[in-house]
Length: 428
Image 1 (cartoon, rainbow, N blue to C red):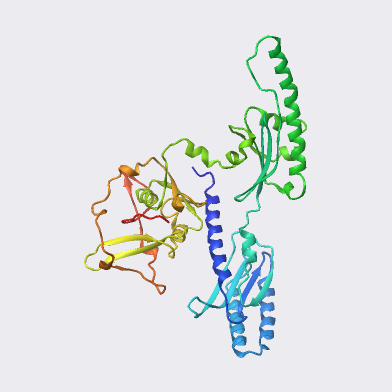
Image 2: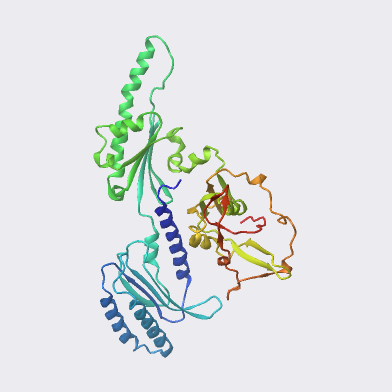
């Protein structure tokens, strides 16, 4: 169902980068010992090391002894990190190092180095009371822009799509004679009038497309989609006066019902086509989605990128029974999915908020309403009888305690699936 699995992996990396960037933005320190170091590809580790040595000498002159020691310690940590690299990675190198102040007012040392998921072309070294994430934010912006032309007998619409942002550039209407069943000599007259005005509509669209898409930033489009009813889009693509620079970027001709007045949403939102078939191969909500994961029925997991669901593993003190409880808002269930989606045999996609924030596309149809509950699922349990296991310093349970297992259906081994327990009703 997924044409390019690597695209899904890239989206997961982008989500991880967003989460990481936000955590760095809110971090703050008391002094000026928070270092942000960006090294672009093809730069030299030796040059950066020399620059840090010079900065070390300058930092020794800081009057405040406490701040001086903090800055010198941060620079030393960065130098040690750079010794792990013989050369700058292909996509560059990002280093954040320093002492931050936590929400509880305690100081915590941070030392992070990584290669970004795509090349960076910026180089800087900053040392002050915050981490600078502008470069990471720029990497997260999807700079691929696509153009859309929707044309039919009622007019045309020109728009662009960049990431999740749709923009209508221009829209106009025309009044072509409509097809009808009138008889006599008038029938041929109306047909002739329609055929004479039809090329004028196509010509106007071709001329406007040049003005809108081959000028300024619009000329940097990654591709162009022609959509509409009847044969207008085909005529436009084959029209002699349709600019060759645009024609070479045409990715697809899309048939769509309705008129231009319905806007470009039906052209852009291709997922509607899948759901309109009513195959039943989808689920939404935390309970049904996790049941599908347990069965091995889920193929694509769709989640809201800011989904906040907390997971606790509860262990009964009197018996060996365990229950898994999902609450909000602190425990990042979505982060667990981002790190383990391949282990549970699904593709992870990020979507807009809706349907409880989480859902999935299935390999086969599942009737969740008729599924039999496991024995004891409906029994009442008292939270006082349980203790939360695997509690870390932050006093939260980790989803890493949930281990994948192998499932078989009809003697055929399926993808590893998440071992899950009872899931109370949840309305995030």
